[in-house]
Length: 179
Image (tube, rainbow, N blue to C red):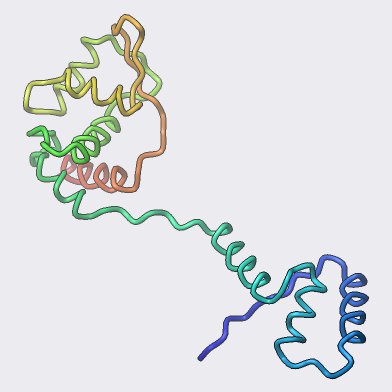
C-alpha cells in the first residue's frame, strides 16, 4: 500500500527540539515507529499523527475548493426548451429547469441599466416565444436575478456569478445564436 507524504510544519524549531527531547528521555526505552511519529507530532503541537494527518488533509481541501460539477442532464433537459435561435420556446414544467432557463435569459439583460416594465418585457419578448413575460419577470425577481422598485415600474439586473449549469447553458445558447 502506498503512503501519502505527510509534512510536519514546525513554527518554532527550538520548542520542537526541547519537547521532543523531553518525550524521548521520558520513554525509558527506544520508542517504536508509531510512538516516535506521535512524539514528533506532539512536539509540533498536534495531539498525535492522526490529528496531524487530518489537519493537513483539511488544509489541502481548504486551499483548493473544488467547484461543483455541472449537472449535464439538467442542462440538456433545459436546452430542449430553447429553439435553434436560442429563444426560450416553451416554459419548462419542472421548477429546477425553469430556474436554469431564466438564468440564461438573465445573461441577456443589459447590465447596470434600469429598465421600465415595458422595456424589460420587450427584452424578454425578444428572447422567448410563448408570450408570457410576466412569469419570467416574477421568476427572475424571486430568484434575486433582478430587482424591481416598490411600485414594480423599474427593473435592474443584479450582477452575480452564474451557477456552473447556468454558465454552461449560457455558452451553449451563445453558440446557437452565432450559427
